[in-house]
Structure formats: C-alpha cells, structure tokens
Amino acid sequence: KAGVTQTPRYLIKTRGQQVTLSCSPISGHRSVSWYQQTPGQGLQFLFEYFSETQRNKGNFPGRFSGRQFSNSRSEMNVSTLELGDSALYLCASGSGRAADTQYFGPGTRLTVL
Amino acid sequence: AQRVTQPEKLLSVFKGAPVELKCNYSYSGSPELFWYVQYSRQRLQLLLRHISRESIKGFTADLNKGETSFHLKKPFAQEEDSAMYYCALTFQGAQKLVFGQGTRLTINP
Image (tube, rainbow over all chains, first blue to last red):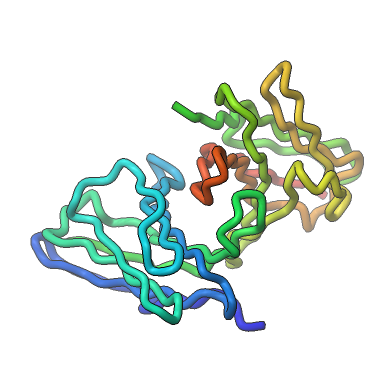
C-alpha cells in the first residue's frame, strides 16, 4: 500500500503571498488531518477533513484553510503569509475513528522570507 | 483544555540500560493515548497505543488514570532506539491529536 504523499516537499515564499499544499492519503482512508510543526510550538493540529467536510479545527487564524476532494485528497491553503508561518506542515490520513492509527506523510517544508 | 506534557526534552542512556520516557496528560474524560516515534530522516509513525495493550520493539506503556500518566518503558535499550518520541492523545472520538513537546532519546554505545 502506498503511503501518504505530500507535494511539494519544499517551498520558499515571501511575506504576503499565498501557498497551497497538497496531501494524498492512503487508499481507502477518508480522514485527512493537517499539523504544523515548529521548533518552538511543536506539533499543533490545524484541521481535519472527513468525507469532504471539516470535522475538527485547531486554534489557527482564518488565513489557514483547507478542503478535501471526493477522492479524499486534501489541500491546505495559507493566505497572506507571515514569517511565523515558516514550518513543516504534516498531513496524516486515517480511517476516521479516534483510536485508529493515523499515518503521516513526509511533510512540506515552508520557508517564508 | 487538553494538554500533554513530556517533562524531558532530552534523555540519554547507555545501551542495555532501562529506558523510561515520561508522559502526563490533562483531560477530565477518557482519552485515547499514543506514542509516536520519528527516527532520523523518517516520517512520524505510530509506536503503540494504549487501547491495543501491545508491546512494540520491546516498548510498553501503561495508562495510569489516577496519575494521568502514560509513560513509555523498555527494559534494555538498543542503539536503534535513538529517535524523537512524542506522546499524544485524542478525545471524544475525534481524530485530532494533541501532542507533547517530544523527548529526544539518545542511546549511547
């Protein structure tokens, strides 16, 4: 079974720009979650999509948004980028049941200059 | 709010010695607890979850609801155990993982 894939793996943007990250879950998984990882804040939950609906949302500003398509692939968008948005963005896919394993992708490293 | 605390950012032990990575959580209900591990240059992966009560790579973790702890233990550390370890919880049937800050474990030869 192919693992979770994320594209692109690396991105460099400037302040004020917007960016879209993509995540393809493991085949058959209907849940995709996004996390931000930084040295200072660690791993923080952004949001979760299940069957094209946002099911949970973390404490991030509205500049962070996402969506999920009918094939379960998900995109995350960050508008009006700030320096503090520089981070590793991870997505994880799973069945959608809380106690089940979530499988993580390799991440997209975003650098905002 | 739900919180996971891993008090040790760094932990260093010798090969063959016992290892214990501490994890405490705050949540008034019944959480699901997990340990995730990230080896060098690899993606984050599940090590074990409390609901399975299994031992993976010699590691075990017991949920102590009285002390709200889920410490990870291994009786004899091996060099390949060197990695970053994260304790995490979910709650109320959600897939949202709340992570601790992580503990970097180094096993010295």
